[in-house]
View (cartoon, helix red, strand yellow):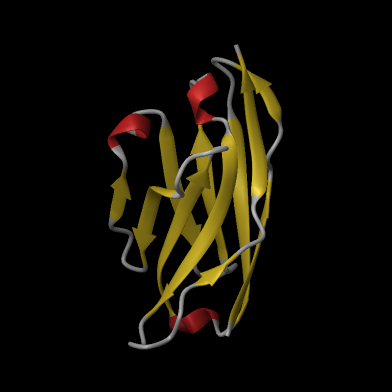
Amino acid sequence: QVQLVESGGDLVQAGGSLRLSCAASGSTSSIKVIGWYRQAPGKQRELVASIRRDGDTYYVDSVKGRFTISRDNGKHMAYLQMDSLKPEDTAVYFCNAESWFAGVPDSWGQGTQVTVSA
């Protein structure tokens, strides 16, 4: 079992920056992929960025060039640096951990609110 706790969400003006953090505990060695998802009111949860244990990354097109995902395996932490924020980035951001082991459900954090004002 992996437990995840997000932090760093805040209210920020458009063009500003935030860094989200995700602290993992429990069976952290079982984590293959860390992902950041977001869910805006009335919309489906979407994958924003992910990073594999070997450092390979993925970004959704809407955040490429503005967001950077990273992880520190030694500290069991993951981060999402968000620059040039836009009002459409407003959402609850969730940290997700995918296990190496088939059949093990993903772990989710409780979410952190990011609000970008125009």
